[in-house]
Length: 241
Ligand SMILES: [Zn+2]
Image 1: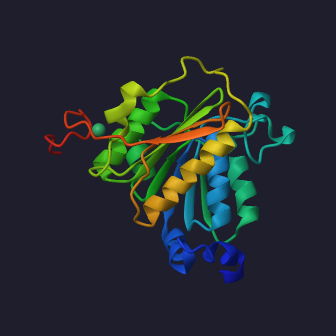
Image 2: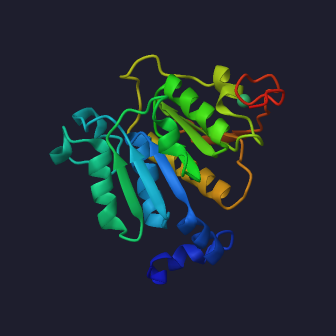
């Protein structure tokens, strides 16, 4: 590894050489390689994550291009995970990049997540988020939820057993009802940046910030202090697994 690659970010006082080592040791799994996942993965690889798995079952579509990183018109019809991985390998050869052109199911998710030090949500599916959450709670792996809709993005870093899980809050979080939900082109990149910040904070041993809500139309951001639900059927304190 050429240390000069990361010199400017190691000058950041809250990160430094120790933060860089922490990132280099980490293994991120990005589920969903569209608007959110392509931006989050790109930032993590450029910043020097050690290992990254990119998972998506879908192919690049013309309607993705306004909000995704990396993909071009020439990639239309190709698997998102493969195109993203091929590009990111050219960005930083120090990072071990693995692509998985598959659908995440309850049969394969443990195998996909069990080596992760952090999981990043790039999906737009409530059932899949619930499956990620349950598996992350079971395996005690931190993960970072991210959701986008129209001009609003939401991010929540989750450390199982310590902070509210997705299921503690799921009833309060909006979920798109259709595949073709409205979304501004800039929003995934902004939200993915908030998501990466939370992921790196967690990898550095810091506490998640809370529920971050960014409203681009108002250029306003707030962070809500959220609490665990002791009766949560996923992470409730009275549940012993
Ligand atoms: Zn919970």
